[in-house]
Image (cartoon, rainbow, N blue to C red; front, side, top):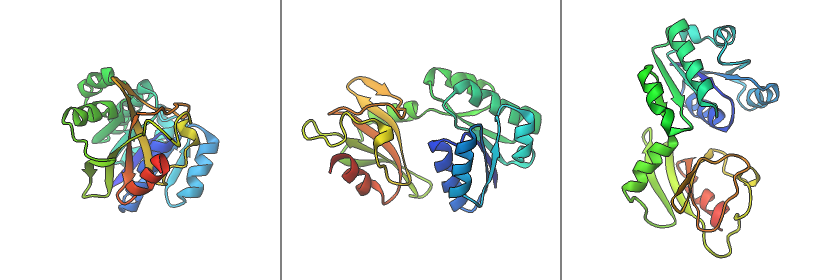
Length: 219
């Protein structure tokens, strides 16, 4: 398949690396020039387009016109909605997928025929199933075991990563922290989010990297 990804942040880069590794042809649209350079250096085999994924010329340059799937994974729901709608209406992409940062917006995407994925919604369902056993638990395995959604509970004492920002952590290569559960709160983390003792950190990792994640977080 030919897949266009709008958003070259950590989620977009992880997605591009994973899909390319499975044999798909991938293009990434990213509006920040320095980020484009970094992605092109790390993944020289994919097309990287510097521009706004909400613009027709930029999507055209990325080859959206012959894409099988267009996905927008920026941190802005409005941008993701506009980019996916543009790909669907202007370029006739058969399937569009958007990252939804605020679960309240999910219904808007669905009403417009866009597959919407909210990590908060997915994780809340998993939490309700009480699927927690042990320090590091595989909650959900994706695509025949190549990716795993795991939970790590930070200790109440001697927490080595507590009071650190997520941007300061040395996470495994194929790892993204998608949610932090703090008591009754569900936190959508950003780089400046600080971890606290007792937090449950939920991350998407490559299978086999769960132990490395555990060592990094709790020793």
